[in-house]
Every structure is written in C-alpha cells, then in structure tokens.
Length: 124
Image (tube, rainbow, N blue to C red):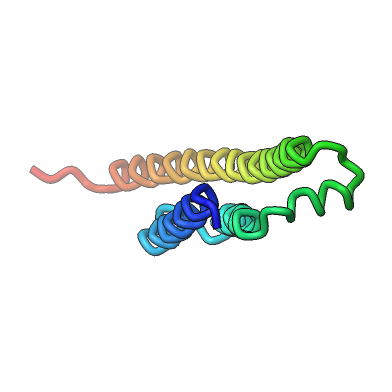
C-alpha cells in the first residue's frame, strides 16, 4: 500500500469519527449525515481499491478517470443543493405561518387584556 492510500484511509476514519461526534452532540442531524457518510464511504473504497476509478470510468464510457470524479461530484452537489433548497423553502413557509400565528395570539391577548381592564371595577 502506498503512503497516499494510508493517509487517505486515516483521514476517512477521522472524518467518520467527526461525523459521529457531531451527530451525538446534536450539531448534525442524521438526515444530513447520511450524505457525508456515503461520500466518505466512496472515498474510502477508492482509497483502498486504486484501480476502481479506472474501472468505473470505463464502465460509464469516460475517457479520463478524473473527469468522472468531477462530473460525479458536480451531480451530487446539484442534487444536494436542490434538497437544501426544498428544506429551506419548507422552513420559510413554517416561519411565515408561525409569525402569523404569533401575531394573532398577540392581538387576541391584547383584546382580552382590554376587556379585563374595562370590566374591572375601580377600587379606591
């Protein structure tokens, strides 16, 4: 095994540990961790199996193996950005709904406070 393979395997191991740590501490949700775990798994496989990239590039008809890496990562990034846009849109909609509900509750609370203050007799 070459030095770069050993370094890559060690880095992948520590990256997996850091993902697990972030999940345990509650800083990374499981649904987002899956993407990072899958990417780390692929990097780990290709760091152990050196000819794997050439095999997959021939399988997909790509002449240069690094082009397959760039194309694959661009596709993955676009899909992930679409997912994050969907999550962001849903959160934006929920925030608007919550703000409207809070405004209605605040208005109702103020009306109740006015009713209570007008119905209370004045005491001297």
